[in-house]
Image (tube, rainbow over all chains, first blue to last red; front, side, top):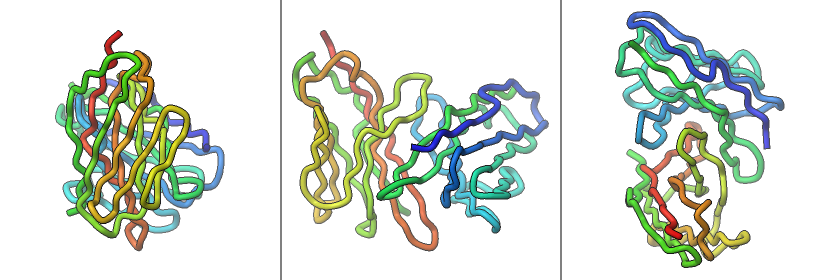
Length: 114
Length: 112
C-alpha cells in the first residue's frame, strides 16, 4: 500500500485564521480524498481532489471554506479557511489504490480552534 | 443520498467467541465494500474488502456480501482483546463522481 505523509499532525489555531494541511504520497495515485472525523463520529467525505481540475465537493462543504489543490499525482493540500471552533476535528487525507481501489489513510491532522 | 448504516454498539463479546458486525447500504449501484478497524486516536486501517456476493475469508475475519439484500457483514472468530476497536463499514461507487462513504461505525469490546 502507498505511504501517505500528512502534516501537520496537530495544530491549535485561533478563530478566523486559516490552516493548510499537506498530503504527500510515495507513488502516483489517481484518486485522493479528504475526510473529516469529528470527535466520536465517523468519517465524512469533504471532497475528492482531482489532478488538473477543480475538486468535487460533497453536500455541505464549499470551495471557499475548504479550498483544495492537487498539482500532481502525488500531492494535495486542504485549507480550512476562516476557522471557527466548529472546525475542530481530525482531517484525514486518503488515497484509493490497488485492485478494487482500496482506500488508505494518512495519519491525520488533529485541529483545535480556540 | 447514498448512505451506509451500522449499529453503533457498543457490542460486547467474550474472548474466544465470534463477533458479528452488520452493515446495510442504500444504493444498489455500490460496487465495492470495505471493513476498516480504527483504534482510538489512530487512522482507520483496512482489514477486508469484498466485491461479489458470498463469503470471503482472511485469517480470523470473514466478510459476507448480499447485494440483493444490500447487506454486508464481518465475522471475527476467536475474538481477542486486541480486536477491541471501532469497525467502520464503507461502500464505494466508481463513476464520474467516484466516492467512498463510511457508516457511523460499531464499537466492539472483547471482554477477557
